[in-house]
Image (spheres, rainbow, N blue to C red):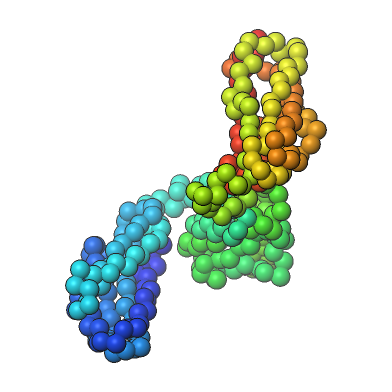
Length: 322
């Protein structure tokens, strides 16, 4: 955050060669980034450090800065990268943080965590303003958070009338479910007394699969879907409409359909089996109830499977309701 001034990090280097390495120059691509190195000549197995200072600018958003280290071994230089997200101080705090949860101000009414994969938790940093006349901190003993969500406050104590960050960590493996989730999570803060703060998290949990080598493409589970765009045409709002989609195993390995999700209660489905042996097929029946709807309508059906190349398949169902 801009008001906290410069931030500092260090890159550590070691000379694993037999000849001395001399750091001759360290160049940056921006005046906002300055460097210093503790030792310019490294003997065999000696460790050195390159200290990098970054001064936040008035430009918001993600940034990437390059630091080029030139030595007698590599005059062209090795490139180090400094990445982060700049949060400039707003001109009008009240209007910028206009969504209030108690005495905390946020920019938006919901927090979009985006795609979260099951191999590693995802952390999102959310800035807020403390409108209280007292400093605040988290009450970890009374967090009230679900097991798959953790929240830290940065700094640990946010002074009165100042900004802070919430580091929100979402663990897809701990969630133990797939698909889109709209969740309300509540945590406690301490000031003069405890206060519950509720936030709305929007998250899509995806199963993680390691990259597949080209030589193995024909050996991994593959799910075939006969149609990914279904046009029901002109339909009446007084009658349910059904459509059948063929799902097939196009590989020599078993296919397991983890989950089928629709984005509306008006779209139901029937799937006789979630497991397909090599060469086997099954029918996914979609049942759309258009009652109470008029005009052009789009619905989504998501299929999650163990197909590592296409773990999530989406079927779009279009119609015009009269």
